Amino acid sequence: MVRVPNLTRDMVEDPYKEAFDHETSESNGVVESGPGSVMIYSPEMRKRANHLVGYFRRVTDLPIKLQELCMILTARHMDCQYIWYAHSARGRQQGLSNELVDAIRDKKELPHMPPDESALVAYANEMFNNHKVSQTTFQTALDQFGARWLTELSTMMGYYTLLAYNANSFEIDLPEGGTEPVLPV
Image 1 (cartoon, helix red, strand yellow):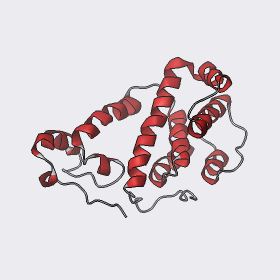
Image 2 (cartoon, rainbow, N blue to C red):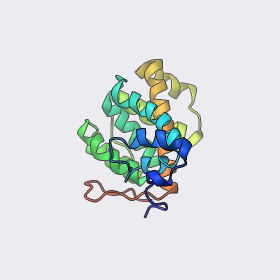
Image 3 (cartoon, one colour):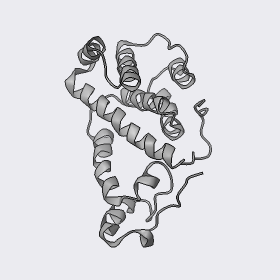
């Protein structure tokens, strides 16, 4: 159960009402679910963070399958039910194998993967477990993705970690009707 009520305009301090209005213009003045329902408590911060989300959603040419893999790896490492819920089924739809998604969820041995998935998994695992990556892992990822995509993947892991902190800290509820099992935590 989420730890704070949905923020309404009358709860927002005057200097932040314009940012609140901007951020809620497409949702009838309220953000009811997801990490955004917490981040809206700082409307200007959320507005600025959404510029990065907009880049990931509308600008980058980073394959969606790799984006989804990046998101579910982050969800698993952060034990974030909400991000897992939001992206595990989509990862499958974008071409991640059922065996891979299930193994990530259950922290089991991973199946054989194509080189791009394998490079991303190794990179993310080292970064989350060691807070840095070895030269060998870095070079493999760099050779696979190039500097721009590797920068975007690294930034995406950081951004989804930020979302996971909000989702986990505020205990954001999962929407009803999901098709994926929750993370065993």
